[in-house]
Image (cartoon, rainbow, N blue to C red; front, top):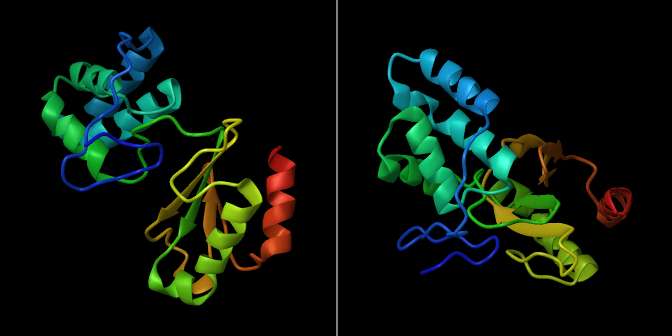
Length: 177
């Protein structure tokens, strides 16, 4: 089963193949070597190296995962297993702004479902999709670690919580356009 933009499946998940070779810059290779040197077991550097690859290449394609495995001298299937396990890694291209709404119980009770419905209507997409202009990808995610201040959502790497209502969401979206 392939990955649709924003989609995830536990079983049968495949990394997207771009067909383009990916290589890290010398500076990136040095950064990954430094990451690996911080740990007695090189496998511990897989997560930060994947994060670096995602920042450099936009998402973790099969080729990007292979580049991380080569840079760390780790088996590619093990690196792919980490990439496909954590929702913080994008396994398909995403919009310029990744909108992630926490859907755990506390956030749902505090209005996350209404927040998602508002975003879907405002953006004209469903959760798991990207707008046609490539600006926004909307995802429902599990815990963003702000249970006491929900509903919360994350825009790219910034967490927003507490005073989230439709007006606040609209102001933020307008500032991102």
